[in-house]
Length: 259
Image 1: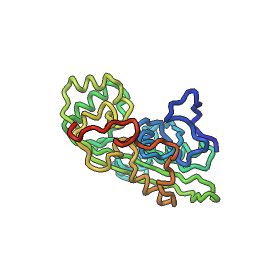
Image 2: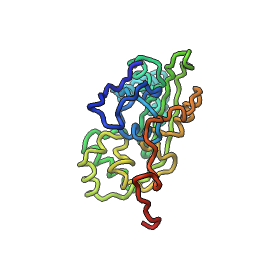
Image 3: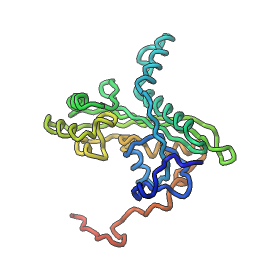
Image 4: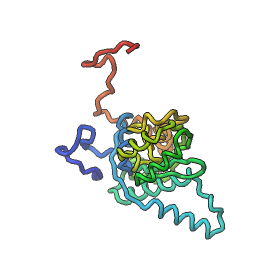
């Protein structure tokens, strides 16, 4: 197998250095949040982002449903993210050299039955935050696995997935706060127009459910999906990564509990 991530040692940060072997898990996403989540959990992975026309994919499915007499709302928000996650995983699998377990992910926010993806523009992000502030929405994150391992390596050929959902309660932001946040550019390219692990963190009052789903990659769900094809998530731990720092680690100074 050829590692999809072609970053060279001279260009890479310590977190991006390519290992001396191909990671088994291949993430079909360029999301910094998803990669950080996997790194924090010590899960070794490669990346092969795919760029799809997501709206065109969803519209084609809606048109087929309408043509067969299905109700227009047959595709729920949870269905939509799972469909897009599947398309990403399948596309990355077809573009890879084979032999990986490929993970595709997609996320959307549901508010009053309306699906909110990436705002893309400052005007749209501002309008969405004005509608979301002080309210609670449901963040759906679709996960799709394609087991593209060779049969002699334990490959099953399975392709399946599931959606993780959680409730997100937004703070009652002022117009000034919304304007300042949108001006950073961060909300333009993320599902729902917000992050929990970046500048948007202070603007979330609470999360009910798996907090990793807000970042777009549910670790508990990933564990269950991998178990379906006979892989323990601990088998993907990267032993080369440094152990997480603790108060007793060399070079750290313990702080008082009241600090």
